[in-house]
Length: 66
Image 1 (cartoon, rainbow, N blue to C red):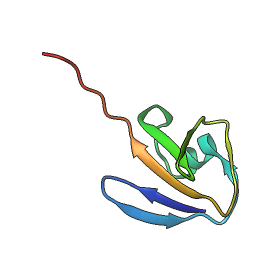
Image 2: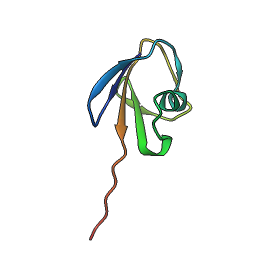
Image 3: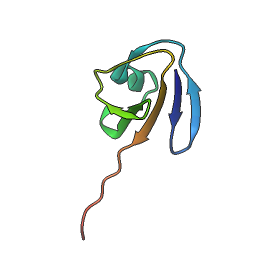
């Protein structure tokens, strides 16, 4: 699968299928600080990602009112 990471932006190839949560673990990314988007759709961590999928991992950003 082709994985696009942000901040800093870079692309990584992962040569196996796996669940979204396992992918974050594989990339050493905190599960609570990232969103996994597969072929344009936000998926839960239990979602199985195929080897040929396009994946984007975005950091969760939150803010509040002053």
